[in-house]
Structures are given as structure tokens and as C-alpha cells.
Length: 82
Length: 145
Image 1 (tube, helix red, strand yellow):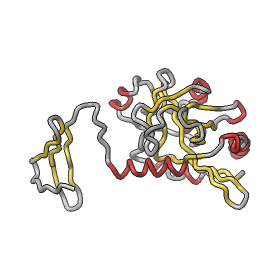
Image 2 (cartoon, one colour):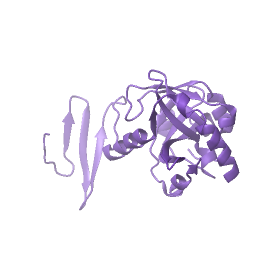
Image 3 (tube, rainbow over the protein chains, first blue to last red):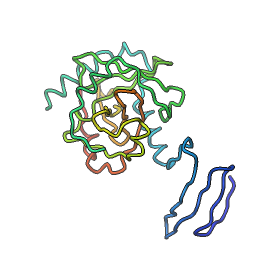
């Protein structure tokens, strides 16, 4: 990992067209401004990990036929609950 | 996007149709296309099955049916990228985890990261709910079968 120090108002450049500026700082938080072309997908990495985890927890890797009746039962249970 | 609309109709529109995650589905980047499989008696639930790997399947539920008064706030910019600013053009699903416990099946919704689908272009995207306080209890709505 490359580690750089920047002051508020200073920035770093990635390749030709991505610029990350330190906008403000307080104790535990840094505000960053990111200038990048539209096709660059920018997101906070913590939530992205959450999404990945969420999806892995939810994924069923198996023969769908095995789980065939689950949703029918769920629909019945749900309608009774409502 | 703020919508109180029941999206039963929109979900019907997607039945057995292929939706496409243009940015990929986090954690499963090679699976971009999924078919929404639903038998009428399974409503408001459905299966979201990968086209390239049919063994990869997610159980999903219509968010509006699962959470009473469900609303979702999305950036206009995000909606614009998905092709429409009209909330009525979107279906929203929660992924469900399916677990077997003591011979019972427990379904739990994942309300923090719903899948949003433009029902016309069938472009799909998973989004993060920034303020999920109204959804705090949503996961607790688990079904024991």
C-alpha cells in the first residue's frame, strides 16, 4: 500500500482523470471529494463489504428443485400472518 | 424515491423475465443476468436465478409486501442512471436468507441492501439504504415453516 500525507485542500491524482481532495478533517472523520469520470464506480468500501456479505448469506447454491416448495409455504405463512 | 405504491403489479410484470445488473451483483460479479421465477401461489416471493449459473439462486420478496408502508429513498442521479425518475417504474426486492433450524426453515429479509429493478428496461441494481431506521424491525419478520 502506498501511504501519502495530505493537508486539507490538497489532493492526490490517480491516473489522468481521477482526483481525490481532502476537504475537511475533524477528530475521527475525513471528508473527501472525488472527481472521476462517470464510468468509474465510486463507493464506500465498508458498505460494499456489507453488501457482499449480505449476498453471500442470502445465496442458495443448490438445485432449485430441492427448495421448490419453500416459497409457496412462505406465501401461505405470510398471508396468515397478515 | 419515495413511494407507497404496492408493487404487486410491477412484480407481475417481471415474472419469468431476465433482469440485468449492469454493475454486477456485489459478491457475484460474474453473474449479471438473473431470471425472476415466480409461480402465482408464491407471491409476494420469487426466485432470482442466475442465468449463467442456474445453481445460484436467491429467494427474494417484494419489499412493499414484506414491510408495511415501505419507502425507499434514492438519489435522483441514481434513478436517472437506471433510466427513470418515476418510482412507479421500479420494483424493489429484499434478498432473503434461507436457513434450516431444527427441521424448520427460517426466512430472513436483508432490508439494508434491496435490489431495485426498472420494470421496463429490466436494469437492476443493488442499493444501500442509508437510513434504515424505519427498517430496523424488518429482519425480525422471519417466517418459520
